[in-house]
Structures are given as structure tokens and as C-alpha cells.
Image (cartoon, rainbow, N blue to C red; front, side, top):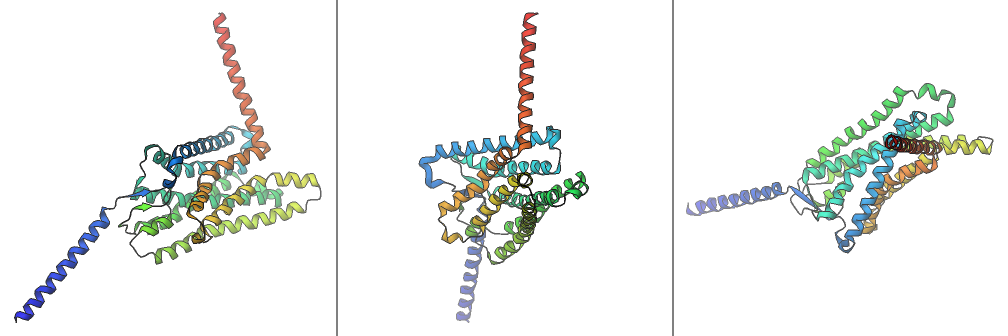
Length: 348
């Protein structure tokens, strides 16, 4: 009896120890309320230079995209489906840059690299949603160019204001609603340490590397879901431009081909850049790529692309350049008028 009693007591002690260990483990899991974004921590000697570089990129990106939106809104000649969609794309670039760069700049300025768990999840959700929305917007813009070049007689009848507005709104709704599933999946993960993320913003891959939950299911679910969200717009964009280019090549006159291609060349460059960097960052094997190079590609994707897009449209698009020239002339005329009024008031 004593032997049985001792065995029961030892078993009870073991169970209590296991329960205590599990409670401590759960406690450690719930204590993790923030992450540390390492960012460019291995380049501390270049911190001031990187801060100025990212600040310049952010200012130029905001200024360029806000300028395009202002031109589209104020110039009556740009009140067409093509430029309405371009305004949406510029607004998306503003959101994309503002989702990431302010936190990067703050970490350079203050040295505080922490971000709350939910702040990290929201940044990840907004980043993914904007990426899917951009895929959809680029697909809609390519469809617009297809109709304008391949079906010019039916263009005005098909791309009415209501249809254009619905397509743009559908792109935004599709992006943010579809990525809500990914936000839910990531929010179910348990993070119990370490809390350091070797990145300058919250993305899925570094989050999966520090979770203590099983990631097999979420990795496959995310792969399938993100593929369904991005490949259809990509295929629509690719198909549209196959028809557009084939139609342009069939135009007999060189001047006609040049004019037709000029209306879609800017968008084609933007599409090529977007999907080119996207494929390199997310499709090519990461283990064959140095971590520093991977971060550089992410900088190109998240910071430089939103900066380059308005430059491409403003430098290669005659209507945008004409609208900008007229706006500058109106501003200069207003300034001269104010100066003349001031001089007149002084004479009186």
C-alpha cells in the first residue's frame, strides 16, 4: 500500500510540475506584446545617410503622386477613365509608402525599433491588401488600354463613368476583403519568442520564422489564397497587352503605331517593373539570395516603385505634361496678379 501511495504521490507531483510548466509556457507566450524590427541594423555607420535617403524618397513619392492626383482632379482634359484609374494608382502608392516608410524613418531618428504585435499584423494586412489592389488596378488599366486600342469604336460605350468607378471600387474592395483571410490566419499564430524580425517591415515570411505555432497549414493556405488573388489579374494584364501589342503591330503607318504605343507605353513599363520585382521577391528561392540583396529588392518594391511610377507617367505622357505646364502657367499668372495688386495698393 505504501508503494502504491508513493507512486500516486510521485505521479501527482509530476502532473503538477507539467501543469506548472505549461502555465509558465503559456505565460511566456502571452507576455510577447511587441516585436523588434532589426531593419538595417548592420549598417549603423550609415544610419544618417539612410535616414536622409528614405526621407527624400518619401517626400518625392508623396509630392509626385499628390501632383498627379491634383492634375487629374483639376484639369478637365484628364477627366477620362484612363486618368481616373491613374489617380487611383497614385493614391494607392501614397498609401503603400505611408504604411512602411514613416516607421522606418522613426526608427532611424529615435532608435526605437519596436512595433506592437497588432501594429505589426495591421501593417502586414495593409501591405498585402495594397499589393492585391495594385494587381487589380493594373489589370483594369490594361483592360482600358485594350478597349481603347483594339475596340476604339466601342470604347466610349463600354467604359462609361459608372463602369469605370465600379471597376476601381471593385479593385479596392477585392484587395482588402480577400486579404482579411490572411490577417485572420496570421492572428491565430502564437509568438513566444524570440521577438526580433530581420526586416524593416512586417511581412509573412519573417513572422513565420519566429512563431512557435505549426506553420505548414498556414503556408499552404496562404500560397493558394494569394495565388488566387494575384494570378487572375496578372493573366488578364498579360492577355490584354498581347492583344494590344499585336493590334499596334498591324497598324500600317509608322506614325499610327507610334501614337498608339505612346498611349500605353507608360503603363506597360509600370506593369513590367511591378511584376518583375514581385516575382523576384516572392517567387525566386530565398535561400539562394543573400539577405542584404533581399532587403534591397524589398526597398525597390516598397519605396522606389511608388516613386518611379509618377515620374514615368509625367515624363512619358504628353497630356500629363501639358496639364502640368498649364497648371504652372496658372500659378505664375496668379502670383503676378497678386504682385500687381500689391503694387497698385501701395501706389494708392
